[in-house]
Image (cartoon, rainbow, N blue to C red):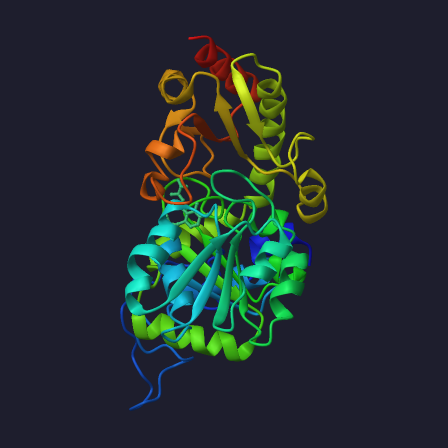
Length: 379
Ligand code: P1T
């Protein structure tokens, strides 16, 4: 089946008892067992398995071209669970432009549990190869990155990583692209992670995370951790994401249509120092992006002339673009990463330029969005 069909049907079928077309929200913590130690269809307790979450997990697996999906209470809960695959004294190589909260989890929390981290430019396969150590067990990359929208060639990264004798796990945070634009498992990644809070949910009404894999052994270790650690997604939130995903292809096409028009507008605006958009010819990895992604997505970053003050002024002057953290919803958002989403990397090697403005371009009419940015840049 094609992606658009899977987005609506994968993991879901009308209720066999009453024909309900939508997957019910199973607000239950526990299940009647057929006998002692005989749970029906594996349902014994909702931390372990819940029908609404299970439908979502199967849908996610199908969309990413994987075999197993797991849903978590947030993107960071998903990330944390993946890192718990490792033993103490393992080395992790991560991108040097990952989401600020991912960096904070690695640097401020997981280091305390004797995991070692290095942060490198993963867009360059050679710097990945050079930074692998005899203790490297996992390589973590985002593409496009948050907030600089750098692109890593996943296939090239997979070749380098899997040539290492340890066969480190290659993890791709696919939040910005979504499986509609890019499927890392098909390009050689071992694990895909999402913040479902963003495009998968799509309506800024839920916080959630996901992990998707192909390998059965890896899935079993992750299911064990999901149940043993317990940061699972609730049934109502699972329903909201399941519903959001149904329109993912339509939304992503419209996000792109709007973002492409805005990128063109910003590229030639006198107050814009530099535009960053993967599907704009000025992007240094434009050709990799075109090859690896179906379209350019809805995220745009740009440097404003005049530094921090000018960036803050623009972000506070828009009327339709809402000043807020997060991204990937139907409504357009604007933010200043150095002072907001990436404040936790201030002073680190991931420090973000204070003049950077990040847009999450929504699916409103593009003329209104262009007019809003025009008046904000002129203000
Ligand atoms: O917020 P949460 O659902 O826990 O997801 C964390 C996360 C993981 N990966 C990427 C690429 C992300 O962008 C995020 C969350 N990002 C924001 C909240 C933000 O505004 O950038």
